[in-house]
Image 1 (cartoon, rainbow, N blue to C red):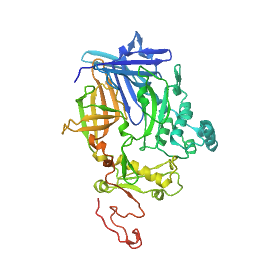
Image 2: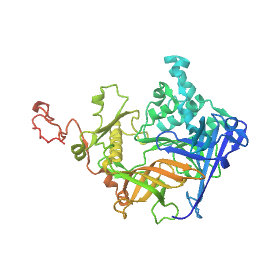
Image 3: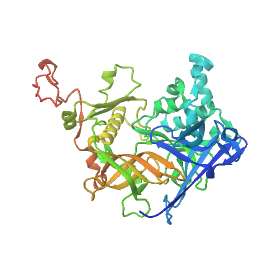
Image 4: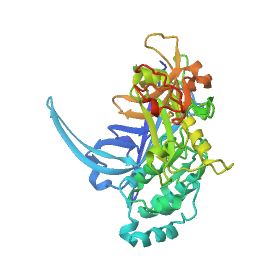
Length: 486
């Protein structure tokens, strides 16, 4: 492994101005998940510049953290570049003391969330503010949501006109609307989002969780430099930039970027090849893996029956589930039992080009099935590297499988990034990764739809059911062909 040196920059933006604490950091750690809001912990001396830390910083102050890991080389998103890894808000300040082996230590611990954490603690309450029916229509008028049918436009308008207005957070250096931006791209689809959104009550972040249409989409927060933000598509509004890399805090909604199925059994690699790829193989001189490497396969996420159905139809839910053919993997059903992945969606038909609703749901079903097929064959892993602030959640890494066959190279999806920095101790990045497959399989779209077929519950009797009465069999006289249990 090549020698490298690491540095940290920590600035607390107080009401009285910026406070540089870079030289006083005893330890720093953070967590950036692909689902939800990031968090951080910062350990400092109890007194800084002759003053108690509680007199210099307070809860609600903004924290800016940047990391640099230098090994003599620079490059696109490489170790030799400065990376802002946290734009957050202090939620708690704790004092800690300990006496061990005759040594007394006393420190302060500042902990908090990324800027989007404000959305976790504030709520929408149209009914309390305006009354029930009156509140619904007044809410539409005030928020500008009236007539919204595209999901991306509706979510962007919600953030602009509702979330970032309800959370009336203001600082001398800007309001939350100045500090927190978004990048929203959604699948083609339309719905009656003005009426749907106007009925919502709950936390501001909970709204995105409720209407983000997971798992067709990802909903998360990120701290991204300017050049990485350009890779995101869709509706954008960017807030204030921080650091030499001009990083911004953003809420991201995007289609799940995995290979997926197409109606009729075809397949596409989707956005997977577009995701930034970081080479962690030993031959790469920029970022070799360090100590720890695990790899695991399990059946916890296996699903073998996939169907998305419309929430808007005023019909019995069981009947609505037959609106479009389900997609099944019969071999997986026989191996693991019936494991459905299904939910009702607010999306209803495509907007460009116009598409019949059943065909729209058929397309969604195939997309979902291809993304979640054969989950027992993907590897999950946890990798500990030397400090690598250039790797972000939602990107890819290339890793040599050092367990077992050391010649196989896997591609993984980064679900979570954790940094740990201590001037006198560890300086590492830990990646939680998923969807690991040998690299050559990610060149074959057909691999992701193998074993899938459409199932029409009104016609198809080729499922592993125990017994069906003759009079209930599909068709007037056709006998039932019995199949063994899976």
